Length: 227
Ligand code: CDP
Image (cartoon, rainbow, N blue to C red; front, side):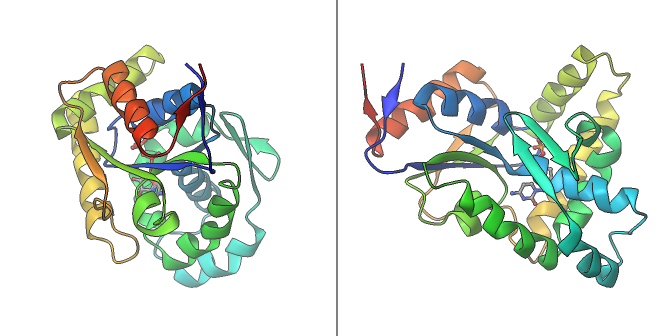
């Protein structure tokens, strides 16, 4: 199905770690014919870059000084930092462990605001933690996608196993819970449902069911079926 949007339609999908936001957002974007923005990938890339330079998440000064040199480019589902494709590196457990520590920094979040907003000129499906609350508060449709921590950890576990990684479910569950706590309790752009959002609990839903609900909501919120 292809859908025509009268005005640039922005759909935000926020939620905790491993809720399936990226997969769902990508499929919704494809179905409706909108660009897709994975903001988690940008935070992961910045964490990978700072960590690689030996700049600790506690080094506020070092982070502030380094930020003007951060050069990221988004290309389809890929992401590069200073010309190097880091799409794979940023998905490992090493980055899972540290990304929230860097993402809590005000300076980092502010430095990424323009970059994110510029992507929305032709409409957008964007997923992350603060899409509906901070980056696109006027979005036409805001979704908060969640699921039980156990289900989210199991999804992440299966995803990693299918990539041939040796992973431990309990360890992933612990990390998912830790990251949520950090993202929810930080001062800057904490993870929480945006005002006017629709909360979807996907614990017992398939990806297709979630995508269908959001696409149908998008129709109600300003997208028209072209067919
Ligand atoms: O895919 P998953 O749910 O594991 O996480 P992600 O979307 O790749 O985001 C990784 C981390 O980046 C999150 O745990 C947040 O700490 C941070 N993040 C953020 O602070 N704001 C966003 N808009 C997106 C991600």
